[in-house]
Image (cartoon, rainbow, N blue to C red; front, side, top):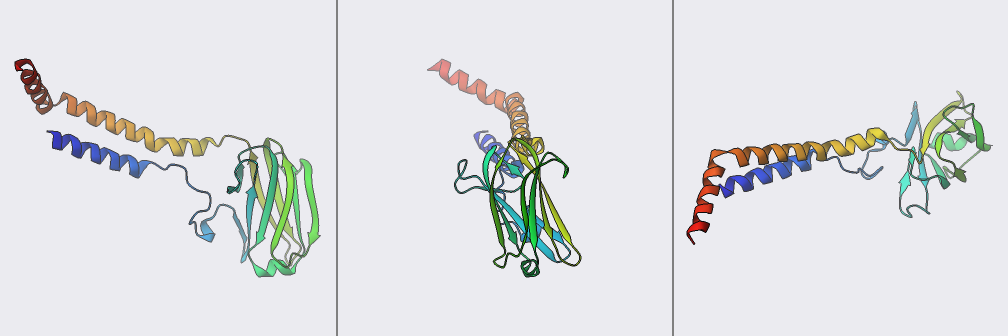
Length: 195
């Protein structure tokens, strides 16, 4: 009986571990094409990283920024062809391109392939627009969410533990209600009473 309980516990633990999505690192071992911070138009690709040293020295973010305040925006021009054309960057407050402009960096050549700027971002939605003055002109857009709760991520992170707890509860209930467990518990009680 104890062996069955241990096996059920191990099975429940394995099931919980398999279902638990946990917190996934933003970049970790993600392939370049699967990275949510990557934008592609044809063969041209750029990558955005947002740093907030006052929040987390080693952490970098993409579209969900944990706190309002100082943010370092780093855009990597992955495609070498982009380094040969003028690139401009604009940060707009609000959910559309028509909002208040926070930053407007004029189109310039970035031969090293890195554009960085430091801006104060307020809580709410922002749009980061990167334009390349090539043939044809290219435009990349990032919707930034500053200090906002991403309910989809909260749901995905909590569904695994909730399902695990439910499965463990059902297993525990079934074991406690089983005839074998009751018989085992009764013999244990008898032994204690006979002492």
